[in-house]
Image (tube, rainbow, N blue to C red; front, side, top):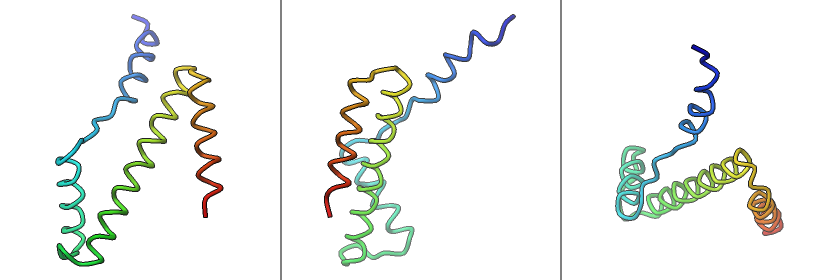
Length: 91
């Protein structure tokens, strides 16, 4: 059997990600910050939470951009490029 017919399926499957929403995402970030040694209620803990949220947003952005590129959705990809340019212009 030609195994190359399964390649598109595996590529599609590898692009699937589980995204945690709402309170689950908050709990995951909180757990990470506590494991890093930050105490709840401190400025350092708050900064850690913001950093994890920021990293997650960046990763979601990259994932969506990759998905647009791999699906050949050029209009959507152009929107991502415009958003990246806009963000690069902010101080």
